[in-house]
Length: 371
Image (cartoon, rainbow, N blue to C red):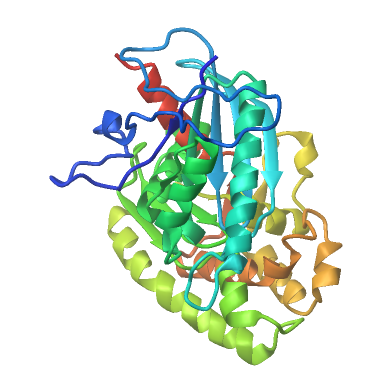
């Protein structure tokens, strides 16, 4: 079995071609060789990291992706084949909260780097044990914006044998939109997709798999909590008012770019913040599976936002769908969701179970199985 770590490159080539969006897919899969002195667990043989062979990979395959987000490092493993829906085989989450480990200069501290290195190494070994055929690894907002992000990822790669690329914000929005489009299909019509992460808000809109408008804004729930709300618990009214003004000032220009496209047929929201807000508002438990329809209505969101803004972190952690590790950032996430639905004049959003990781896997699968 071979585990291949692949690296997303920049969003566009020198001639303006899309790299990660699929127009020139081969360009973002450079040749990668194993580090001869890469750290491995005692008594365990290191997986081979080698260049991808030319041509398609017929039949089912086991794919993995390591998503190094602002809050969580997540290994997702799926079984997939061309034309079929990827089926989850394993999921491992580690809440490193990297965005909170950035120092005053915006650099990831030494403790954060050690924790990340250990986590990536462990996930690579788990992917090996699970028989993953192809492993992709990428980092998003926290390390994209860290002043030492490139150096950190280089050292992590040297220590683990996994090459980790930085996913540009707009490509993050494109791949999330791809996942949403594949989940809902063409019958969904013109889509507007919103994704609140730990470090950024991604927005995509359009009729096709490649959105006509994409945006990545510094409105992640963890980032805003750190910069605007901490350490107040619950936050002060003055802090919330200032945060709302800032959020609106960031989103409003994007509304102007999407408006000329025409009215969206369906508004969709993805990822943990929206899922938690929908659950608090009365959506079905996620234990009922991904095919249960879940929506978050604007009127309900207004009530939920007002409610969580009055609660302490401990009280928020007791709400349905809210984990202890995410309770502190729920207020900021609710404010972003509230203002986004208001500015885009959305009455309700439907919660999509697929998001960025699935988008990366879908694009990767397209490339692996294409001729």
